[in-house]
Amino acid sequence: MSSEADQSLSSRASNDDARPDNRLAFVDQGFFAGQRAAGLAEVMQIMWLYEHPIDFDQLRRFHRNLSHGLLGRLIERSPLPFGRHRWVSGRGPSEIDIAERARPRAELSDWADERSQLPADPESGPGWHLGVLPLTDGSTAITLVASHYLLDGIGCFLATVDAILGNTRDLGYPPPRSRTRLRAIVQDARQTARDTPEAASALVAATRQALKRAGRRHDTARSSTTSRPVALRGDDGDAPFVMPGITICIDLDHWDARASALGGAGNTLAAALTAKLGERMGRRNDADGTVTLQVVMSDRTLGDTRAIAVSFARVSVDPTRLTTDLRDARAGIKKALNTLRETPDESSQLAPLTPFTPNRIWKRGVDAALADPARPVLYSNLGDVGWDVSRLDGTHCDYAFARGTRQNLSRQWLERTGGHMQLLSFRLPPLGKIFIHVIAYQPGAENTKPALRQLAARTLAEFDLTGQID
Image: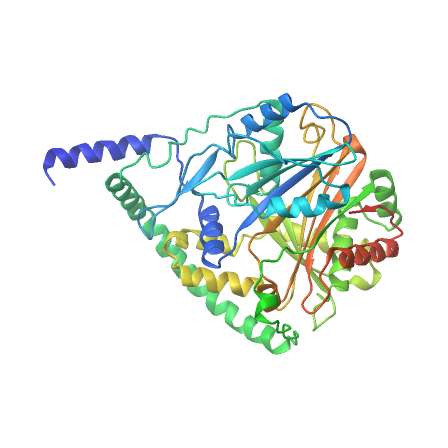
């Protein structure tokens, strides 16, 4: 390469570095790379139901605004196998997808499942889509599905509220493929060189942690008596399968009164309901009979552009007394959350290794996490989501739910990984309701929505709770 060309290329790279930093955070890149290596695709979904006619002009305004916030971006991989991925600008679909025919109210849940399985591609786009379904009883359902690699649950709600309020943002991300391949290689190579010392320190930390965990894994494996998954015929087990999901809607006054009567707060009651459902789904630990909750805590700050801004607290809950006394569960969860805040996260020390991690290692790590012998239950409480998120067209909806779910699953895969259960809850003050969405699969069980609804109804009754289950 000539000296002039080299200087020109160096100047361009320097100008690129002067732009807003559009590199993915290590956690974002790791989540994306690990899930893709394991063949997974995760999405976030929010659904609103209106019993009255909706304002389509306001809905189209909301749809346009979604492209001018944190959902208005895509992931562009580095041309280097060990390079940092970057955010680039990306618009959503040009039109709202309005169903051509009305469907009965009884099919609303099935329609939501169908929408959750439509592609939301975080690389080639669109990374999200908005669908509308008229129902034969005159009501209207609207659902937003977005790639989980663009935003987490709280992030998706915040992006939704911004779009409703018309708060658009210019993130300064360049258009896709705005760098030539040569410029991208040079720029990413320079960045890798700068990251190498940090990665070397992370490698030392990784070695220490691996040695420390080796004994614990051995003890866990010896004490676990987890049953083997049920073998399925190929024609049954390999077909696409959507995990059963149900929504529970409960009056806030009723919910808070029961929580207080049991010696806890609303969020403790949601965690207890999660643990009790986990017990009913066969997810108790073999060693001590507890249910392990993986509690999702948001770390998102004002102006945060990360896709995944969460941390996890792990707590073991004894499910036997939950329906009569929440005090022990409340103390255990509080202790776990305090430990999370006060103790440095060991995994964060390994983050600089993300770009250097090969796909086979990502896949092995994700598979190991999914086959955790403790069979944890994922619990995410979004809390009070405010007054604006329900005003999609300027008026308050009558019903809503939110969830994270996976695409392109098979029953065989779920059996192999030991099943899955997660619960997400949020409070919607304008409606005076708490909405709880449960997704679950138990190896060898019936695994249908009617069966899950029956299980939820029995569990609610144990807490002296009543509510609508859809």
